Length: 265
Ligand code: DC
Image 1 (cartoon, rainbow, N blue to C red):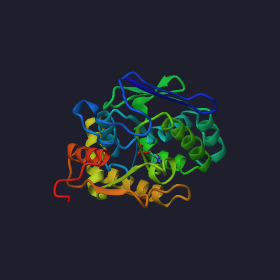
Image 2: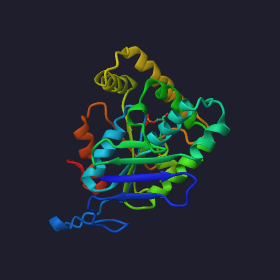
Image 3: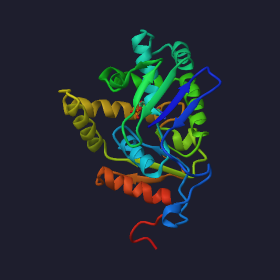
């Protein structure tokens, strides 16, 4: 079980883990197997909607014993609050104020989807609603909101080994990370994955609607003025079109452990 607790406007940020980690802050060794394989302590994973970064990042963190932070949840939490409080999505000042007072707690088991507690209420089931999906890109484009959330994300990263996923982790939040990954897939494949997820959660949304929404969000996320979605210049680009989730995580784990791929010299 672990918790990551970020509280804007507060001096202290708590992030605690009750699962065992036996490693120093710089790197760690696989002592059990007598290997001296260094594991990348800070791993940044970026990519567009449906690239598989959240599921893969979460599994990677569990395999490595790293903390995991899905930064998209933080933008979704502020968006959810804005919708709840009827804050206009064009009111940058009000949105920034909302972000600067937010209290987000992520609670879960390593490798599992965590519960999201926002201002003491469990909003896990509300963060991926079509309404939040539609509105979150606008909130994430507000520079003041980004300033607050990036500061919180860096404070979590300062606590130790972490896999962090988002859009600007390799380019902004952890630009010094030793391992940066950019996951991508064609828009059709990503829309298919997202559509399957929505059907599983009981939605009857049409595939075309999901595809259109994804195209719109790709456009907004990659053309905004502040921290647009793009691979860091030193990121490893990993297309996931033909890889299943396990395949992606295996590849990420090899990169994190510095293990060459089969066939590499
Ligand atoms: O990954 P996601 O779909 O949950 O992200 C939700 C939104 O937040 C999406 O519009 C991109 C934005 N986001 C961002 O701008 N920067 C991040 N580090 C993470 C997410």
